Amino acid sequence: MKIKLKISRYDPMGSSGYEPFLQAYDVNISAGTTVLDALHKIKDEQDGTLSFRRSCRSAICGSCAVKINGTPKLACKTQVIPEFEKHSTVIIESLSSLPVIKDLVVDFDAFWHKIHKIEPYLNPKEDDKDLKDKDGWWIIKKEDALKTDDASNCIACGCCYSSCNTMDADREFLGPAALTKAWRFIGDIREGKTRRLSKISDEHGIWSCSRCIECTEVCPKDVRPLTAIENLRSEAIKKGITDNAGVRHVEAMVDSVRKTGKLDEAAMTFRTLGFMRSIGMIPLGLKMELHGKMPLPSLFGTIEGIDEVKKIYDEIEKENLSLHAINREREEK
Amino acid sequence: MRYAYYPGCASQVITKEYSTTTKKVCQILGIGLEEMKDANCCGAGLMTDYNYELSLALNARIFAQAEKMSLDIITICSTCFMVMSRANRDLKEKPELLEKINNVLKKAGLRYSGNVRVKHFLFALIEDYGLKKLKKMVKKPLKDMKVAPYYGCHILRPSYAEGFDDPEKPSSLERLIEALGADVTHNEGKTKCCGFQIVLVTQTTAVDMIGKRLKEAKDSGAQCIVSPCPLCHISLDSYQGEAEKRTHQKLGVPVLHLSQLVGLALGISANELEFSRHLVSPEAVIMRFSD
Image (cartoon, rainbow over all chains, first blue to last red; front, top):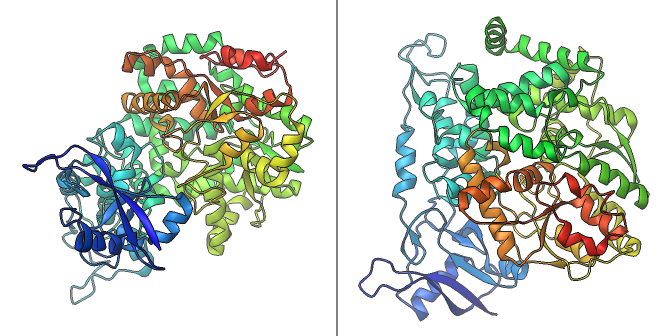
């Protein structure tokens, strides 16, 4: 069957440079034809000037990521007919949040710059008798390997980077791909003493993720970057890298639920922002109060079964000594 | 139809009007809600950042309570829906994990067998109640009212947890809006993020997101937005003034809770739907449908 493919064309740097527009091509599609097959057909048979990246054709190299009907996908892993059936159209565009070089080819410099920022290589512990056998080999148990298994499957295609909502609003955000790469090493039991975790706890790092979960949804390799970011956040708290608004936000919630069983928005605001910045929130707070929306702590109350909640906390923290130590320290303060 | 009703923390205080109007709507439709008054907070995702197992155990306490009631859980909060669905899926899929969490719950005298389902109010209306039946209950069709559907994130993603609607091309809100007699606008950013989770952490980024979502809805020609999530409502309604300051333009987009839109079509008065609790008044849009 003939299907019309609409492809974004843009040549910002060429001598014959053209402005962005959608060009339509009628292509013969049969069952199983992938979007990449169709792009090749266009380039071979209709228009040699169309530019796109591709290499392996089997969802391994990560070169051919484009937006198909608005969602970032690998062109080689996506068939044309199901796309057409679902959306009644096939629109192929370059990835978002990265500048276009030509047509579907985007500049990955910013993407790689962020991957390099997290130092994407292992800095192993110098010597660890528990982990090395007598011949000096690292012995890694299956359950330890599994911790970073998903993260190891990343093919750096950029789908998550393109779909990330924080990235759309903050181009300096490290982003789901680089943070997943960071977890690949921070979650590795061979990881030695590094400053990796502190660096990604700074501004534009792990605490800037708005949990839109687009990354996990679009990943063609099921890497689940959000889970990696959650793991990094837990790890940062365990290691005591806690001097930032992101951690204060989490701790306020953890303490609120421990005390009352509920989430106390007022305490969350005050503890996350600190005294000075909370003052800045007063005008909005008063505006909310006019509509009966001021989240006063007294309004939240305490659930009847709070003792059950406390027992659950105690039991988990008993298992998790580092958390227990952090909380003891906090309470003493 | 009877559910264990979990309103979530936000709708017990800040967005109280979402919960009270949901109860009014359900009463008219004959949907039974048994409020889980002793349930704890789901952790809003932040508990997972702190400790995954603590988050699982706290959610399992909620599930154990519903199991005792022999009811499935219904919530009106997308974030509660996402957090509970994810936890529930992990517990159901990994028996050894469920066992481990049950050992924790045992200290509190509780046990979860893995037999509860978590639903969002929107999906219960569509799947369990049915739009055909709802259409018959409409007393005041919302004729010529232009509504921008806004899903946000957690009602759709991650689809591996529950997956009621297709995150690439969702349709449940559109179908509901049409069933109530209103017009659906083409809202570009309907599945994008409202920034709520970082509004206290990196406020400028969040407010930028809020501004984008409101602008997209406005550009779609909508008179108002309908939202199935109280947290999105706080972002889009309460923080709208902040977004206006940052974008140097008047946005003036009212945001209706899902229950308020349904309630209006069912003939509940504006007064009873508590629109006065909104920071951006929807009066101009809703007055002609209210007595």
